Length: 158
Image 1 (tube, helix red, strand yellow):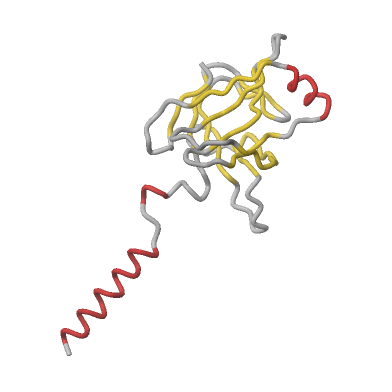
Image 2 (cartoon, helix red, strand yellow):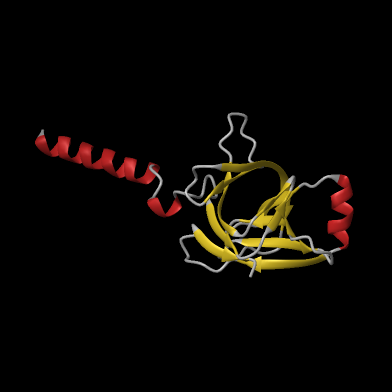
């Protein structure tokens, strides 16, 4: 009888270990990425000064996986909540990747897309129509963030 209990408990523990997420994938659901920008960057509706920010998929009850929240470095202040649309790319990379529109004027670069490591689908930031035309004609530059493989901290936009 003791052997059956031990085997049952071991089987239950094994089943739980398979079901529970591993720590290495803790940020996969919300795609949390800590990024440091060395110069100001534009997002829809505002400009973020140079600094460190968390980009996180919002946890919404409606299941919308296209809402991004941008927090300060310790996640104590929410700077923006932004609706995005799905962006596609041909090949996934091991690092966070952003595409910026770099206007000729003195304006800061605008974030156009954000791809989480290992994903072919990402997030395209939606700007007002008048900004869209200007950003479409600007030079586009993709920056692959430098940082550890853990996908949590990276440096972009040198």
